[in-house]
Image 1: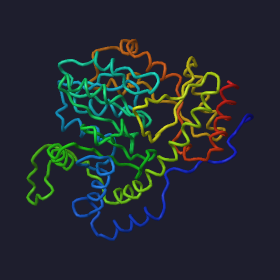
Image 2 (image 1 turned 180 degrees about the vertical axis):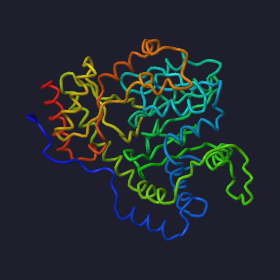
Image 3 (image 1 turned 30 degrees about the vertical axis):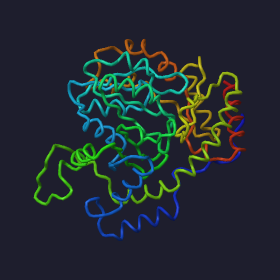
Image 4 (image 1 turned 90 degrees about the vertical axis):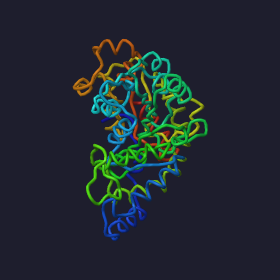
Length: 387
């Protein structure tokens, strides 16, 4: 295909090295490969909690289960509502819906793409049990405004932190904000073992309840099958935990690189007519940049998709942005709000626009060189102009 192309390849993802190999052998040689007999999951939970400033962490099978478990221990279930951003990966809403709770989508901020505080306030009812802010692409939602809403209404916050390993809001890490937070370690995430998740808890009571729920209701010391609660098997295995311990050890260095590259790339993208990079609230003082996101306001969804395909052909790991959750058939299968798609769309104009005109680039692009940021911007510019 004619047009500007990447002259060099971006770093691969996932990244691994001797630390992962050593960890896997360590897990293999200990002779116990599940968390009840081994030590890797326990060690990872301590290290991950400490890294994020939390009292407790619980490792689980994946990020979707992390959200579901977090909501369950806070009492979310049939008859309750959970407010979620309309622009997010659908696990945010389905975690609530699988518990029988109604997921209520609200609009997002047009600059940061995170849940809008005013829209959230309008959606609170006497059935609202929790607010679920998603730290989109690593950028913190407005936790100051959301926490005030939650405190005033007496409801919980569950941070969907699947994109925000190592992030900070006004100098505070995810686990220092006093609310439950759920992480993902799926293959594309900032730390990965292929799959996996974790939940951070601000106190021992919630952590203990979650442990029971994630292990079929069975206490860790039980030898007589006294299952104290209902639950499921969300336990993480020892091999995944050993890999995640290694991944955690290089997280900060990678964040530092991405924090250096994004301002350069964002400025270059902003110089392209019609291109608007994701904005940043100054209170988000550490963004790990799970995605490099930008919009082309006014473009049609079809033309956006064509641009993504062309960028991929030209060597750029580009993707269409998430579809608005209420525009997915799966959202309506169970525990959906008593509204139509168009009802929700009318009160979510920013989501409607982002759903149509947003593109994201894999975070491995931001692990590239400064020269690659210039190359990347040239390819984007040429692709946009040619369309």
